[in-house]
Image (cartoon, rainbow, N blue to C red; front, side):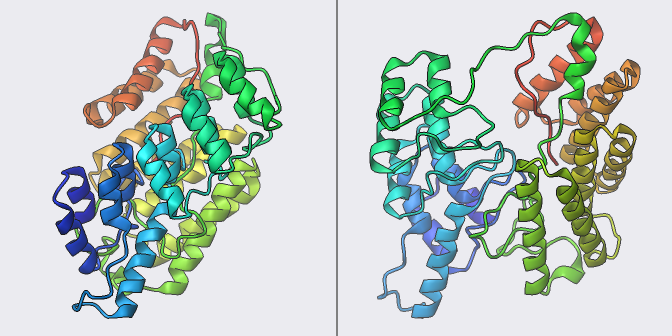
Length: 396
């Protein structure tokens, strides 16, 4: 929405405040799941973050006290919204970017939630330790109360990361706070005969609409909509059905939690229910939310090895986004279809879909995705790859 534009273009803070007064929603997410707060945090612009979150003074005569309270509540809710690909809140993103000023400001608001996990089971402390930042490690542990053993118990602990990077000072700090090692991190290498297994373990990270339970009004479509509300594309959805959005939010949250817990049966059930809700809402018309639901269903099939069913779901998602002429989403679908063909050793079809995905992707906005696709293409062309360290692909 307009707040995204204002933050990205670094407009004067007064315009940000005026947009908030006009009820532009600070919780709205763009196609990557970023709120305006995510963009402010990404470059450690704490003054912009304050413009997005500071409560209006009671002397502002154009607003009633209840309006001021409601606006402020939405502004704070935005700090709990998770971006789409990794499930990071603004505080997590601040830690990843080592945006110290924004980290400290969010903590002052009491909204750091320092021990929350992203979709992979990692915490803010994992991000900081990975970056060998001793000062911010001390800050998280001593001042924010970060758990030295936080995160998913099946994932490496912060101490495991420090042992891998060899940072003695951080190791001592974590051990002093009872940090424990859960596993040993090693660089994985693969021989040329292991090409198929590489593709087989490249499964979708199904994190569409990552929103924490603190957010009461989820953004149903993450498409970038230049308006002052979260209206979707279908005219039938102009009326805000609170019970419907609450049900969608509940299913989204349960699906994400189930994936983190590797309970794919439950996640599949949630995504099937979401698909039916979207079909009813949009009267079975082509809509990006229906495509995303099909993609997520395909990702579950993909994870459990039901590749024929995964391919069918991915192709249905591609059909829908092709009708919408949404090239960004088409590229993601083509990528996922290519992976299935690669697993099935249909190299010709896999290369065809990977090449289509590259052609559809905007080079300036998809540097990382294009790099991954290029690596996949190289694997298929040469049947050889020295190492494979990244096991995630593309979300719609």
